[in-house]
Image (spheres, rainbow, N blue to C red):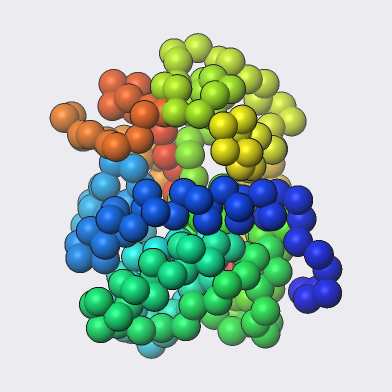
Length: 256
């Protein structure tokens, strides 16, 4: 961790974009705080996906926590949780929701590629569309490894690789049923409307990166929504997502 290093250009761009987008996520964040755990854009219940380990007494960090609804789920299940997010506006919503629901835990305004916390302080690092797509994996995966104790678990949810290959180079335009992008070399994706930057890797690159940072992959959950599922997002249709995975969850454990 180098606290003196300046934030990367994508971190600054994403901070500016999310400080604007934050208002759109306040109401969905409130609803998620009220609900039982459910994952991704299709809201698949934890009771079906079984992503979370036992949390009682667990030290957990949410990397790119946004409105911190995932952190709230962990805290209610007995975890000692910390959230970090790049957007001050997102964290303002998270703090308001903490006050509304009477549940507090530390929230840090910072970059999940450079977390201002000591080594080996956590048993679980988790990200649902946070650091998992908005941070460079070649920076945030080593940082997650640094933060975790030996045997600690990393869980992160991302857009499906096939979805990204079939997505037009425009915001909120539905994925097509054909490949539009190269698979080899996929890494940085820039979106023209809000100037934000996402990161996505191919399967082999994910596996090599995780293993290089001391992780063993335990599972890759490819999410398929049920018939009749809906989402407020327009970049993928339910018909598409019933045929190909629009979301993936990686679960890895840091080697002892």
